Structure formats: C-alpha cells, structure tokens
Image (tube, rainbow, N blue to C red; front, side, top):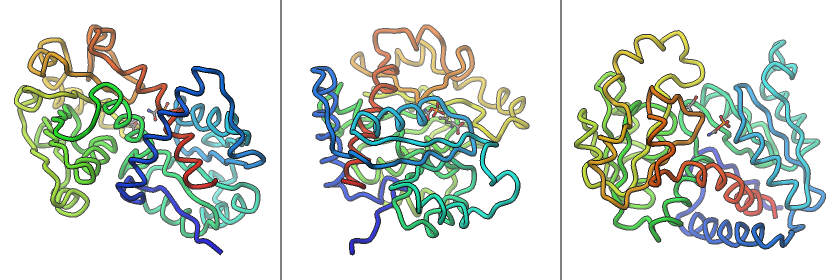
Length: 304
Ligand code: CP
Ligand code: NVA
C-alpha cells in the first residue's frame, strides 16, 4: 500500500515533481484550449472544506476535478458541523471515508496539520495563515509562461511581508533559487524564524523601501493589506502599509518586461491601483486562470 501524499506547503513536492507539475499544467492548458478532454480522475471525489470564503480556490478545484472526470463536494464556512464543535480530526476521518482527497482552507496551520494527520487521503492546503501553496503553483507557472523560466529571475514582493502569500513566495525562492526582494514596513516584515527555517538558504532580501524592492524586477507582486481574519486590524494596516501601494510609479522601477501578479481578490486603491491591474504588464487574470490548470496537475500527481 502506498502512503498518501499531502500538499500542505510547496516543499511537500520535490523540485523535480514541481517541474513535472508545471509541464503537465502546460499540456492540460493547451488541451483545454483545443477542447481535448481527459478522464484521468474518473470516478474520483474531491472534498473542498472551507473555513474561510473563497471564489478561485473553490471554483478552480471543482472545475479541475470535473474536467478530469471526477466530481467535487464543497462545504462552505458555517455549513459543516465544525462550527458546532465537531473536532477537526473526527471530521477529517469521516470525509476520508467519502472522498479521495480533501482541499482544506483554514486559519491556523495547527488545524491544517491536525486534519492532514487524521486523514487517510491526500490533504491539500487551500490557504492557511502559514501559506497559500496552491496559489504559488499558479503564480510560478505564470512566471514560467511569461518569462520562460524561474532561473535568474528577480521577484519583488511589496506590502504585507508576513502574509500567507509572502511566506509561500519565500519558500518558492528557496526551492527554485530565484532572488526575492520583499519591500515591507518593519511591522509587517516576514517573521525572522520563518526566514531561518523555511527560508534557510534562500536569496531573500527584506527591505523597507518598496522602490528598492521593485528596482529592475522581472515580477512584481502584492496581496491585500488585510487578509481574511485580520479585519480588526484593518485601520492600522491601512495606515502602516499606505505607502506600499503597487502603482504605476512603483511598477516603473521594475524591468520594462516585468509582469504584475496578484492572487486576487484585490482592493483597488489600497495595495494596488486599478491602472496597474488593467495595464499591459498585468498577468493577473492569466494567473487566476492558471489556478485551474495547476490544480488539475496537482490532483493528478496526488491521485492518479
Ligand atoms: N486567490 C485565491 O485563493 O482566491 P480565493 O480566496 O477566491 O479562493
Ligand atoms: N492573504 C489573503 C489571500 C487571499 C487569497 C488572505 O489570506 O486573505
């Protein structure tokens, strides 16, 4: 019997597996354009368990498994017995009796790990405080699509340097060896303990000037200033992060061929301007589409 594989963070796959996943995603994307269909996951069931809202993660995983011949069942926040106190490990063991894999979106990483430990089927992190690895698959794939490779790239991250997205970019920098410059106020810098563990050996520069971070970058990315669950801090975050907006002037510091990424949902006029989102350098909607193709490749890798 083979042991199940989880995808709780990028490093749960080897570099070689990640490269294969991107290659497979490119094939699946081309096949979808050509209306070529697949049955690689026929009869398989994916459970999507959400403790926070979602548009892209839910829909891309549902569409992904359907388009590979399987089907999905989703429980939205508040819909399951979890809100009435059912332990997460009981929930996990039960879902694993019905489904072949679980996508779990939650707050604390302890909940994610508890669910994964209790599950006999693969568990995929659909976003936690500690990272958003399925989003990074789409982001990295988009960089490869636009720039040909990740090798030698300079990636700038501006804004909340402690967000789940920033943390996953740090992990990606370690795995793929590209340079990551984080431009964040000291209040929202990535935790030192994360940099010395998950980020150990990565070429990550933590800066407080967003212009310095963006200078000459091939990719400029940002995320909301107030992530889900941080709503009580939104006034202070708005104030502290106010000078870290990704606007045309900041993008002008990057390489002329730079692309802009944002995982969405975006708050126009806060972390990014509408002008940048709609600019020719924006790869944001390709990035969103690529959630579908990379999720398919991930499901095949974990399940087929
Ligand atoms: N980017 C992303 O994960 O979007 P959702 O919150 O809509 O799933
Ligand atoms: N950092 C954001 C990402 C949303 C996809 C959040 O956690 O709300």
